[in-house]
Length: 103
Image (cartoon, rainbow, N blue to C red; front, side, top):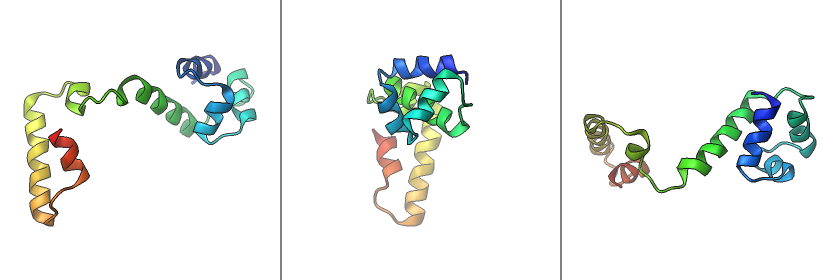
């Protein structure tokens, strides 16, 4: 990721350098250096920034993964069945993944 893209994504998130540094767990000086191109952007920082952009775009719109990914019906059926089988094998009444699939 280039420094210009890093800066563009920060602005897309509508965050200051200080706010973004807190979200990324990096220092303010590090974020400033990434944007100026003085430091290379570590892969884990890049990944975390892209995840934050994803959440701001799609992740918080209360869509199921089937709507977001446009999964075909047969794939949804297969996943729901595998969760049910796992639940029967483990004897658990409800799991978080099962609740997510049902919604």
